[in-house]
Image (cartoon, rainbow, N blue to C red; front, side, top):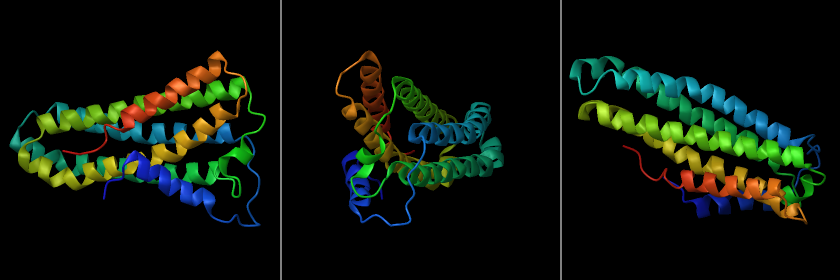
Length: 207
C-alpha cells in the first residue's frame, strides 16, 4: 500500500508522540549522523542504480536479452527498497528524541552543520532523480513480459521513498524553524526541503 506524503508525516508524528524510554540516550551530533546515513544509502543504492542503467540500456526490447537480465534487475530494485527501509529506521532512531520530539535534540546546531544537512538533502534529491531515471529506462527498454516480472520490486522501491523522506524533512524543517534569524544558510535548507518533497511526490506509481 502506497503512502501519501501527508500520511507518512502523520505516521512519523505518532512515533514522536509515543512515550520515551528511560534507556534512550542523548545522541551526539545528529546532523552528522543523518549525513552519514544518507551517505551510506547513496553508496549502497548507487551501485544498484548503475547496474540497472547498464543492463537495461543495452537491451532495448530484445526479448531473449531481457529474460537473461531480468533476475539481476529485479534483485537490484529489491536491494534498493531494502536499503531505503534500513535508512528509514536509522533516520527515525537518530532524529526522534522521545518527549518533545525532534525539537529537543536540535539546540546549538551551527551554520556549518545546517549547510551539511542541506548538502545531505541535495544528495538525496540527486539519488531519487537517478532512481526515477533508472525506472524510466527500464520501462522503455524491457519487454512487457520482463516489466511484469519486476513490477513488484519497482513498486516496493516507490513505496519505500515517502516513509524515508517524511522523517528526514520533519527533522530538517525543525532545524530550520529553530533558528530565530533567517540567514542564507537557513534559506538554502528550506529550499532543499521543498526540492526533496517535490521529487518525492513523483514516486506515486511504478511501472
